Amino acid sequence: NHRNARRILLFVDPHVRQLAPYTTVMSSIERHAPSGHTVDVYDEIRVEPNNLSFQHAISYMSNQISTHGPYDVVIALGGGSTIDTAKAANLYANYPPSGDFYDYVNPPLGKGLPVPADGKLTPLIAVPTTAGTGSETTGVAIFDDVPTRSKTGIAHRSLRPTLGIVDPDNMKHLPPSVARYSGMDVLCHALESYTAIPYASRPGGRPPSPNARPAYQGSNPISDIWSLHALRECAAYLPRFVRDVEGDAEARSRMCLAASSAGMGFGNAGVHLCHGMSYAVASQVKDGYWTEGYPKPNDDETNDGHGLVSHGLSVTINAPSVFRFTGTPGMIDDPIAEKYSQDRHAECARILAEARRSSMAAAAATTTTTIPSEKAMRDQPGEALADELLELMTLLQIPVGLRSLGYDESNVEDLARGTLPQHRVTKLSPRQPVELEELRGLFTSALDG
Image (cartoon, rainbow, N blue to C red; front, top):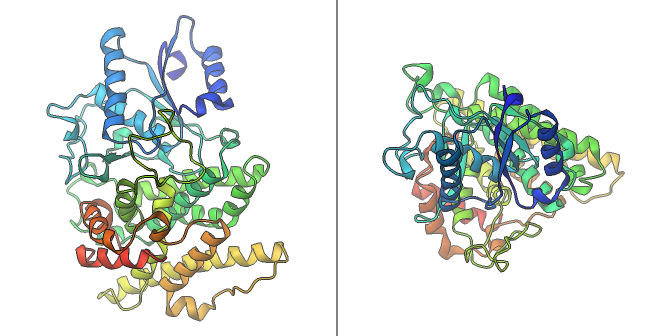
């Protein structure tokens, strides 16, 4: 029972530590924890964590356990970077690998070893402060791998938090830029999980037992419920949320739940190419580029000599190119699978178009843009979905095309090769194959949106 916890470890984003949610958490601990409790606070969280920041957090938790004994509960207060850091530290501090850090890391960069069968981690309470990653619902922790300039992660059911506390008041002080890109991450979680290859068609076939089922299984009837709900909520409320984060309590609440809903959707179905390609974009960021509105670390306003493409931006900027590719008619041999994919792309385009129509009507807006016809969405669903995403990106003032982040044709090869190791997600694309040639084409298309 976490209310009887005497030894507590709190992971908190250093910027969140200056805000009301931190005070609320500390006050709640003081009220409810038994007398004599202790709280250790770790706030050296890196925005977009890497293998080095994970290892630093792991060392801290391991040393504290070695010196003072095990923790009764771990709390993570912050966005996905904070929650993922807490997940990794909790795993490695409780079950140090026999080899090295990469034992638990997803292949091909790591060995992907499972948590010991009898392994129980310290209970983890995740308190998100962004409407974005849905990390409070998933068994995944994502990080930049510095040596290979790529992004990868650790995935296991044991990593899933014991409890998620999702409170829209914790998101009142989000900067508009963070709200914008974390919200688009929610949208892409929903789109990718709903359009992913069906679970029954996943490469590798049926697992020998439920325990061998991968974390990302492909779209399925359960994930569809969560993903469609999140998509509709994002389409309706994301623009309002970005426009008035603090004042629009309804939009904040709806986006808050949309993030968790999308997390439950993609946490079962998986994501595909938007996220698979994003990892190379984020890890190969051009020096000096920093996503507007994101806080910089305090070490002389640098980040280990690295720039920052926020996760939500790195995902979103590829999305129009991705859905043109996955939603192009006639590219899937099986006619049943083809219809399944085309119908889903058209449905996603329709949801975004209807939300845009409603928003325009509510604002009595005059615009030169048009809503695509039902025939257009049926005939070219990938193009229709890409166009709707570009409309939303323009509305939210999101950069369009990789050129706006400093990339050009000379970077396409490295970006494509940096995506190749992401088989765990690229194999979930409804259109296959996705190998080097296809990735080159996707990144070339994404240069200009």
